[in-house]
Amino acid sequence: MRPILYSFRRCPYAMRARLAIASAGLEVELREIVLRDKPRAMLEASPKGTVPVLITETGVIEESRDIMDWALTQNDPEGLRQMPDAGEDWITQIEGPFKTALDRYKYETRYQNVEPTAERDKAAQILLQAEPRLRTNPWLFGDTPTLADLATITFVRQYAMVDHTWFAAQDWVGVNGWLDRFLASDRFAQIMQKYPKWEPAAEPLIFSEKVG
Image (cartoon, rainbow, N blue to C red; front, side, top):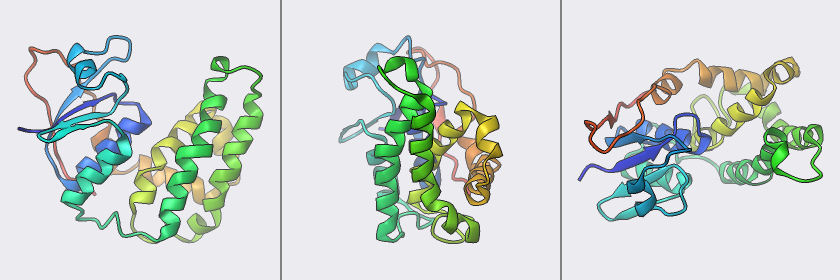
């Protein structure tokens, strides 16, 4: 059985799952969903109803980081998992307090008593921890990306897009360069190809190309 990946193109969690699958050069059947019309087959496999969801021969993987680990454990030609302990610390910071502040900044109407500018600045303080490193290296830990880069940069993209004019105006040479290199890469272009909404009767769409 070829694994099945339920995905949504712009979701940062689904994006990072696709990044790892692409780096590993694995084949999955990609099923692009529409969030307001989630397919029954996906909900039967994963009742929580969020993407990404990966269905394999051995079970269902419902968390994007677990999907990344699933892919890179099988094949890691770029050595993405070879990173210092600080890489895991960075991922924890971005997945936790950074994403919390980002959501309150981007989706302020979902929360009570939230000041979006204050949340933006909280996220910025976390992001700026990487600025000195990125002023001297193209990626967080050197000349090539690691899991720390690919597991977090999709959230940085989401943050930048809330108010791109403001983000681009900041004197963040390292962070801006890091994000710009990613957005200009073949890697990003490949995972952001547009796919039609999946329908049960549709021919399978295979997502598999390894990119660098």
